[in-house]
Image (cartoon, rainbow, N blue to C red):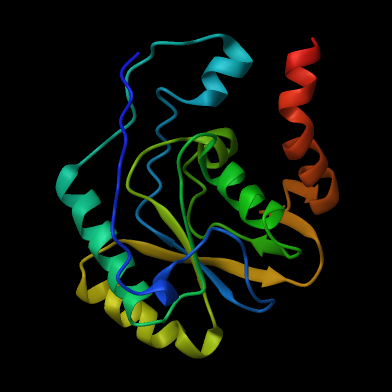
Length: 191
């Protein structure tokens, strides 16, 4: 199995940006576009045993713009957290951001009625990053995003309550999520 190793240089330790939610009331913003592409997803594998489906949508230029935009937001100290949308899709990315913190979130996807809920929540199409920022920074953040020619939408807000609520169709308890997350390897090894 090929393995890719990466080494990078962080020139300023204050630019280290983790996936964990940092502050209640921070805005949650999705960089990138939801296409409803479920190909190659963990969802298809786990529920239907469909391994080896086509890879999800990918556009190298779109990816470059989004990565450069996120890096600028970090370097200008405008955002509190950043988490790529990868294995498991948006639902898992939001759950992980809550798991790694003591906060939850309330999220509503605007104008996504054309997408099936399962595709929206678990699609793994590339070039998407969930960021959070203080409300006071939202104007500067969205201005930089637009200047970078990146699609985005404001999804919701980080909450003090330790629950993840997505379009009111998924409401997950943070403590239960942490328990499942931290014990999953042990359970798999014992079965």
